[in-house]
Length: 114
Image 1 (spheres, rainbow, N blue to C red):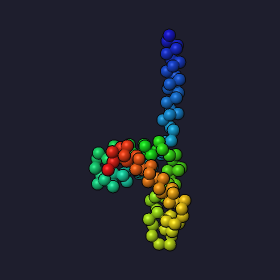
Image 2 (cartoon, rainbow, N blue to C red):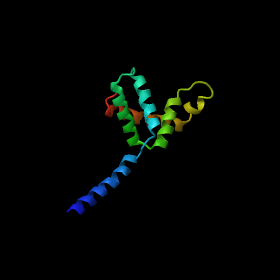
Image 3 (cartoon, rainbow, N blue to C red):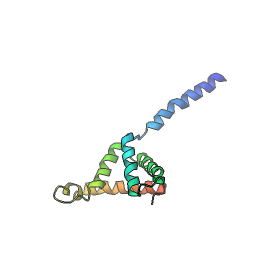
Image 4 (cartoon, one colour):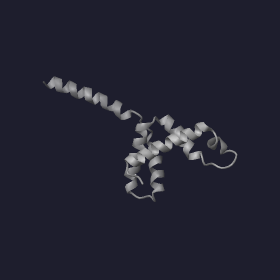
């Protein structure tokens, strides 16, 4: 009986690291998101938890490489001038920005961010 319990425990323990690392974003990227999110909400302490929840939700919905691309598209789509045209004009950039906005809105709703 002890052997069976030990085997069960080892199987469960070996599966946990695989689950935890799925869609894992670098800590610095998560912190950057949380700090920017908190800043948007007047630095209120309660938003540390809400914004952390939001980046976790975003990480569940997209891979990190895609997150970098689509969040950059949204962040830079309002750049002015000739150089900003690369981020304003192409349909692909608008689609990427729209996708990120939708993901971000869903995360905000799930985490009670106004």
